[in-house]
Length: 338
Length: 258
Image 1: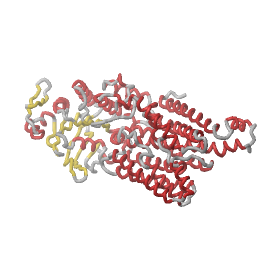
Image 2: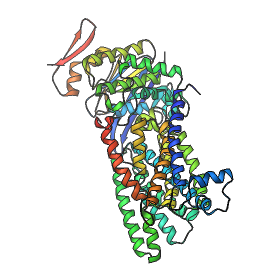
Image 3: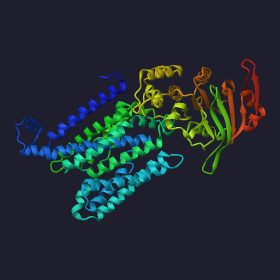
Image 4: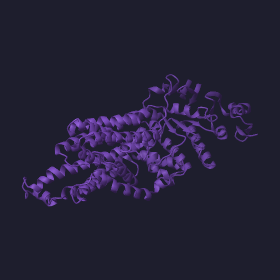
């Protein structure tokens, strides 16, 4: 193994969060309302279970794509939160809080009402929605000589409220048959994902993850402030624009697939930062793997907790995330002094 | 040695509000250059223009005889390093890693550091009196320690021009003197030139080779400390009664309230 401490740290943290993700996958595939389980999976691998076994079909067609989708959504939203917190140097920034998710949701609902397919039709309208809010919330204030980060956050809160109102308006205009689906979708819904869609989303998200990882050292410099980053050789305008475009593409895609899942982008980056420090070269892979594991577990609980049916996964992320976050916040020494 | 920094007929404003008016000066290589002036006289704006944070009009600002607008951000970061006036850091970077970031313009995309880079960090921490704090997180440092951490980061950047905005503002007396001695040594050894903004007339009088005195965006006086620190000039600019004497032991002016 290499002696470079940075590489060693990235590898060891990725291994650790990777193990968490593998455990979450195992639980997500093995547990559910039917009697299909790990035994079925292992049996299929050894050839004891035939390919047309119902239990294997449940794992292959229902649980596996769902676990993969949860992983992608958790990874993307955590990374989105990390990027926004970096750009705004504000611990409160998150796609959901900044209205980017809300904008994507408005776009996605317009897509649904126009009768478009989930992928790529609704994904594109969702991307357009997230880009539109981003332009208003971040790009317009960025054009001014002096950048007020508080202004961006306030603008985001307002846009979020506006999007909320627009969503409720469209919901009340829609027919009864669609209402239940849209309401569930608004709280985050990972059910009914098809393998091909999940694969397409995964292929689209992978380059986004890679781009953000290769920009992670510059994100460290950006965290020191725009002036500092500029004088340390970073083309700040280009970096911010790249990060924003990549992130809103990511968030738009995710929202079109999963609906609005809050809290992941806040809880995961903060928890990992308190544990691992502020170096983005470590945090980016940790957020992808850890965020994926977190949402996989949350989705499992959303399936398992109710006696009948299931909860929207956004309810679970908030129910677990909020108390966990407050716990870490009060335990943290570095925040108490700042 | 030539001039590392040349400023010619530089005027600058935010919108309609003009902050700097027809500023001109040269900073020779290896010089300790200090910019003085009352609040709001344009000192920080001038320093930010030199640092490339604000865009200087073409043909007014030259680094190594090349217009500053022609440099890329990375090229500029190998020429100048910048210590800002205020810097709050809420995010938990380790002090050592923070100072190591000063090496960024010399490193690759992922900022992978070598042994030489880490040796420079250790050295910079030692000469800024921060070695025991190496493993501390930035938010836990005191104001003075954070200020010295910024200087250590800038020294690590290893640039021929070092720009500092009131680096002594939150330091105790001993650390003020040690920082000025350190900067003065760097200049004398020819490792870099220093351009610094300050409010401390006596420190400036003691250590500067050249002084630029700004008032309301215009050059009020320019030259070595003995030429600039005249009682009538200072009293007009600062609007208070002062006494200026030449300290016989060091041959430099010393200023106190009359």
